[in-house]
Amino acid sequence: MAPLTWLLIPLATVFVASVWGLFAGRPRRSDDVSDVERYDRFRAALSRAAD
Image (cartoon, rainbow, N blue to C red; front, side, top):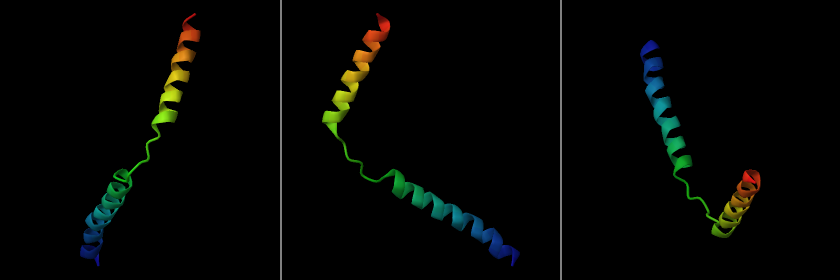
């Protein structure tokens, strides 16, 4: 039974790594308009803080 336990460790590692790879490589939607608006609000807040 002990050899099977030692074999389970690398198999579980491969499984977790493949799930992480699928999660990390998923397509993400990009919303350029809201990103630009967010950046403009950020710049405005920094300019107010500098005054």
